Length: 238
Ligand code: IPE
Ligand code: IPE
Ligand code: MG
Picture 1 (cartoon, helix red, strand yellow):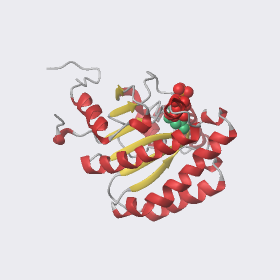
Picture 2: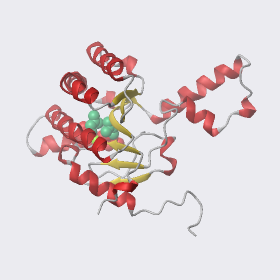
Picture 3: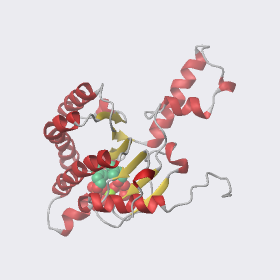
Picture 4: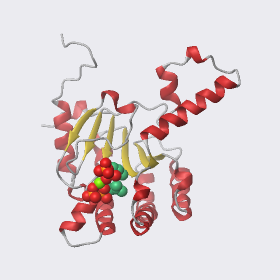
């Protein structure tokens, strides 16, 4: 049984398996992404219902540009559709949308939708919904290193005084807790450049289900599995 009093504060999800889901049905990959968007809609709602404070979803990685133009542009078109159909409800539910990753590189219509979603929800105080777009964990770390190096070069920061907390603050997730739980659908046991710094002590739950088949019920099962874990953070259990 799910313990409602021990819901992880930050859940991150690697939404993988859309392509295989489509292939199994004789559909094109973009149709898998469309079905994935429907799954996401339900998981965002359910995160709010369960009392998750931060939900971070991996929507497009810095490596996903290797895919065909058709697939890449299809994914960004879906983002535009997602914002058009979901923004009102997200806003009504007090959800704050946030983007992690270098979204300056995404197509203009998607950028406009993102700006609208960010502006509309910026003062909301409920669930923080991070969408990782053109996100890579290594790129994020390099970006932070550059920001700190620039401060040091200007004499505003002593390199010897750089701390882990300072570094964390300069990441896209600055001010947020690290993910307690990272769920990966699609059966692969890897992080694929997701939250490289922040995942140091995250619990990982992998399900073989493809992302479009991931339901709120499966989500609760993953959280239950998380609740059964013994998080030691390098210490010993008394
Ligand atoms: C994940 O599904 C979504 C994105 C990477 C955008 P995939 O498209 O990677 O699906 P599979 O892994 O090929 O089945
Ligand atoms: C990870 O899935 C990226 C997203 C879910 C957006 P990939 O399908 O890109 O990861 P790999 O290629 O299997 O490592
Ligand atoms: Mg994949």
